Amino acid sequence: MTMEGKRGTLRGCPSQRMTRRQFLRASGTGVGVLAVAGLEGCASSSGEINPKTGRRVVVVGGGWGGATAARYVRAADPSIEVVMLEPNKTFVSCPFSNLVLSGVRGLGSLSFGYGGLRDSGVKVRHAAATAIEPDTKRVRIGDGYLVYDRVIVAPGVDFLVEQVEGLAAAQDTVLHAWKAGPQTAALARQLQAMPDGGAFVLTVPPVAYRCPPGPYERICQVAWYLKTNKPKSKLIVLDANQNIVSKAALFRAAWQAYPNIDYRASNKVVKVDPGAREVTTDFGDKVKYDVINLIPPQRAGAIVVQADLVGADKRWCEVDHVTYESVKHRGAHVIGDSTTGLPVPKSGTMANAMGKICANAVVSLLNGREVPPVPPVNTCYSWVSDREVIAVVNAYKIENGKVVQVEQKLTPGQSTVYAQHAEGWAKSIWADVLGDGGAA
Amino acid sequence: MSRARLALVLAVPVILGLPAVASAAGPLDQPGYAKAVTCAACHGASGNSRSEAVPILAGLPPAYFKKAIEDYATGKRPSAEMEPFAKQVKLLGVDEVAAFFAAQRREPTPVRPERGAVERGRAAAAQCASCHGPEGQGDAAKLVPALAGQPAAYIRNQLLLFKADKRSPGDEPLTKMKAILKPIPDATLADVAAYYSSLR
Image (cartoon, rainbow over all chains, first blue to last red; front, side, top):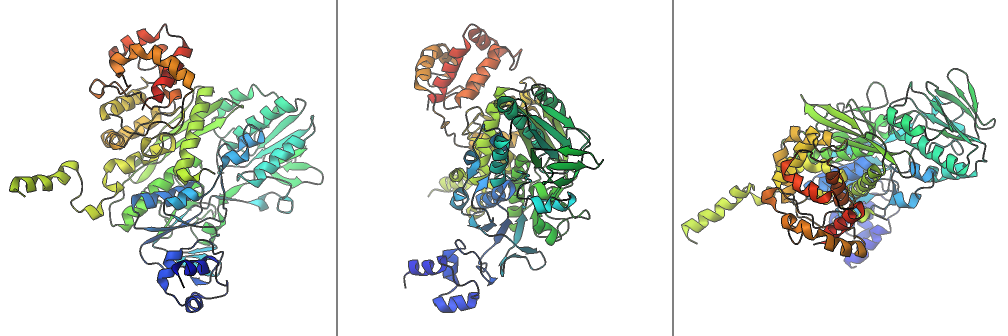
């Protein structure tokens, strides 16, 4: 049997019920072949998957934080094996996805493959991690498990669907579109199909949630679309918060151009009735809709709740501000939207920054070196029309081991120059997250 | 090998700041690497921006980089987007970050300007060459930046800021350039930017 033949055997995947020992016996080979073949292609295995031969970092989640961290561990020390677990084969950018609702951009222009990560030497496995066991340093994938030296967990957010009555049973039609992908396209179709004169209701969840300015940028995009295409329609915003959460003055100025917006602060939606096409607020007010975009309350991805990495609130993970190591379990690092305790927004730039800083910390720790204390950065652009952008920037320092904000600055207004910068940011950061080969 | 020569060979890694054991070398051995790592979100890997309006930092002379950071931090070069980060870089250690970008190999922008604009810009750029050099290579000793291969939209936006005296007002060495730019139409400045961007 040639080496290629052996690889083929593994790529074809042994029976999912076959143990590794059975598989090795059947293929008459040793561990070396497993190492050659790597992990790709197999949906599931039982027992230990691909036993560790050197130092290994497992990254759970291939979004903005996870993919960045995976690439940067390899960049800082190529002798460390990096396995990244991500069920989706396509990365779809949440930033800029509000432009899909207005039709200014297509979803395809925001969709990328993971080829650039593979080119960086990351072993990308399209499977969902089902559990993390910090005590034995294992990540479970169905019946099998991977052993790690350190794990970087970047699961993003999950939705607290049960906090809105009627939502659990209506998730096929009552859309959040808060994870870019099929729901983004589906909500755009609902908006396009809405009769002129209709009411589009958008609900903003209470903080903390992913992307603080995101709902308000979406309001701009939906309002711009309605003003341009369905001028008799209105956009009713039910915001659970007392005021616009981010860039308030800039958004209020931008909304001057959209008299079709009916913004109602302190209106938390607690119930949805798709039959009556109606939502109910915590004051008992009922609001009729033709199209609903219900963005539910959020917490960290389910896997960190299972792994007991969340705090007493059972929602978010506290971490060391320099290494991003969990305060609850050594050897497990958490980055991105799932974290709490740092004075930072849940943004793509922030997840990207945390991914790089955490990667450098993990490489330093695995090499017995001092961890360089580096603060993160935040840049956040919001599209307020089809061509104009506003931005907020946050700078930080590390003081006594904690991340402290140095300054927050807003652009003085909206402009097409900031739109150029936004496009530049997107192009750079997508490549930074996914590698140059990441572009689809 | 003579004793002097041997001493020289042994001294080279020390001079370059390289660790004595080559196998332990990695990006984290450069102090600027970890500190500059977050800049890539906008400025690209190793500071080689691939977009139209964000400048390339790779290969910038340290003195120029440090002046830019200083001007952004004090608001002399007004930018809501850069002012906070300039302050952050200063707190982190601007010398190390400047040294990191200076050591990176510059890759010219992949964004190709329109050929007509490049040709028109070539003629209009004649008066820039006395300071910026015939190939737009700049003069590091005089803090004159290399323009060759920078993204066109970035150069154009900066020319417009200089023309309106919105970038570094009161800087004596810049007064001559601002006077030259004053009567030039914005469209011509865009052509000049396209020309310099096209140079390699």
